[in-house]
Amino acid sequence: MTPATIAKLDKLGGKPLCALLTLLDMPRRLLAPPRQTNPRKILFVKLVEMGSTVLACPAFEEAARMVGRDNLHILVFAPNRPIVDALPYFRPENIFTADDSSLTAFVPSLLRALRRIRAANIDTAIDLEGLTRASAIIARLTGARVRVGYRNFTSEGPYRGRLFTHELHYNFQHHVSRMFLALTRAAQADPRETPLLKETPPDPFPALPLFRPEPADTTETARLVREHGGHPDLFPSIVLLNPNCGDLLPLRRWPTERFVELGRRLLDERADTCVIVTGAPGEAEGARAIAAQIGEPPRALSLAGRTTFRQLLALYGMSKLLVSNDSGPCHFASLTPVRVLALFGPETPLLYGPLGPGKRSVTAGLACSPCVNMLNHRFSPCRDNRCMNAITVGQVLAHARELLDA
Image (cartoon, rainbow, N blue to C red):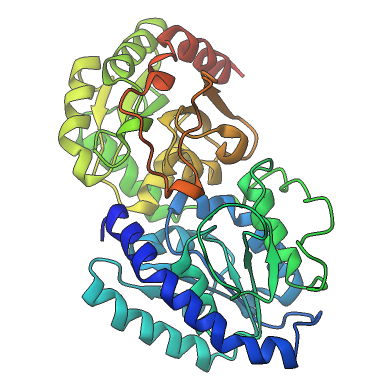
């Protein structure tokens, strides 16, 4: 299902379902109001966005401290499972998936997942999906006694009913990792205090869990680099460019010709450097064209669509720097030692900047940005992303030099 289809279903079907479930919950809320408890088994509902799943690592770490890793569970859409498998928090049998390829596939797969979740006797469900109605409904259907999520209170925003026992106000002033952490800590707070959380959100721990590739991942990734013309022994300083050649996030793209110019200037300045263009399988053709404009193997090549997810993480670990538009790879790379330079426009690094040492963000800070957020389903009316065009090659090159020389 496309993001537009999901948003439409969320609006048309979500409102009446939220209203119905709220009505059914009213007698229980009146007769047995929510009370403060200590979670025993926690389920996170984090359906989409692999990158923001990495930003939830502080929340996962806090939950593991509260109930132990054996008692942590998560529900995700099937395409987002690879990032959960790469994290050290969830046992494979505690990962539940739903198929989002179509509505006819989604409904039965979700019902199967909910049946398994109910059988696991999970007492606490935490909705990490922000302000979508679907995730609120799913959290309610898990049967968890404690349900943590966001509510509008007196603010404007999408109607989600009263499906949570522990209600927080979504705060756009804090990095999303801190808000994820606040949701987890609210699970053991007194729900009579509204809105939660009545404490300062802690800063995320300074380093995310380090992904440690299997020897086979590293060996196969090095083989792929050589197979496509690279030579890591002669050019050990690998710079990765992630230009997002697909059409999924057109507003977030830095102009392609600037990635080309950046790659060429890095090769001119640094004799030991190789530039590798990365991307999803659907971006492979565009990525190969960019690599060809930058140079020829072994100094410029494309691996877009050629690696598995684990091999991509291994490639990050072999590299010195990743330059990317604001997208998932910025956050995947945060699980590895590679330095990251993330380019922001329609979103803001104040909320979504990559975490960890050696991770840096660049934004022009125009008055109109950020223009996408949880309240508009990440759909902006903008058709002219000057926020990205305002970032010059010279600016990015200067930051790249500092990170490479650090």
